[in-house]
Length: 408
Image 1: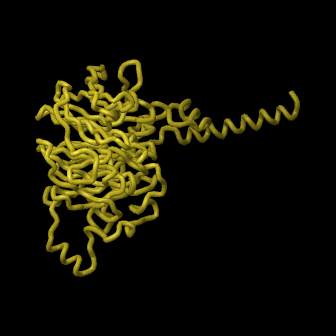
Image 2: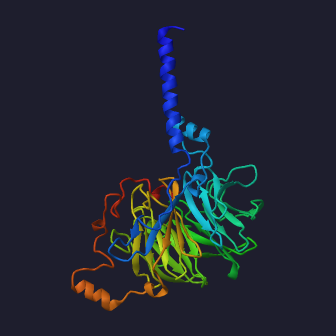
Image 3: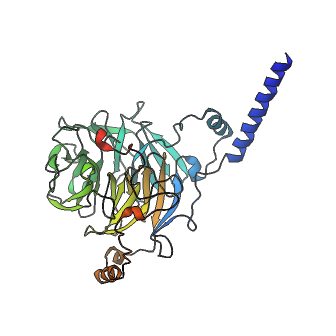
């Protein structure tokens, strides 16, 4: 071996040692430790916190399970995209009735993740030997059967608690399903159908629990009250009201159990209570509505009257911040989970210091604040709300744009 070759070998060995040392130092470090205190909170001090960032979920490491040495070294040396045990493109979320299991549809990896928060394990779910065909929305019934919208085949696949396929259903009128929501008390399955850009469908299909199409919700494509333009995400509250994210109309439309339009929440804009590209929608135990805005990369909370109460999050990659988030789910104890799409993770929060009475705004207090020129409820322009990690202002890129067909 020549001196030049020996020098090359020494350099390679030194490089490997450097990688090994770095990998050993970083292996086992979770993505983000739970932070009951000291993490981001909304509203910020000196106001009393209502929403706390708690942790980030991406893999078993997030639950305290250490990555193996080989896995750490491989990731460090190759710089490859996250492997199958790591969340890559989270699209939608569902929480079990006891709050101990979180399901995450991964649009990019064609699988569903199951985070068992109690047993600290992560499982990947597929429909048998094949992959899901572009899994989008997911939902759980009382028996924790999993409903997965497969956008690539325009069908909904149902799996049991053991992840065995029970069956699947569709209808010729279902163009390109996005989300699914269940109202088993009223024998209904709702499926959002944003269809195509120039299609007139743009509605929500209603199936019974035997998977038969029985109705539709929405007045079709348009901007009128009850009209939909790329409906993407759904939620059903305890009263049976259906919440539809009307993404390209930048609002949430609410329908009663008979499919009648009840009210519209939000409008296009950049102030509190306004949206750019709303996506996931969920309801907490107090009946408040949470709306993810992919454009502003935050979540806004509204009461039953459609009044905005608070926003949390904002564009960024630090703990508690988001980059083009998509779905949202809320557990029985008001633990909040948001699919942080472009940060390749799920961000967890908790609602704190809050009771049902906090869902109602005091008109007298608001008038007093406005008279004093100090409206804490809703600043006139959301661009005024900034910090070093994020902003509620305009998005910095166009990847949240659903004009491509609302497929993300």
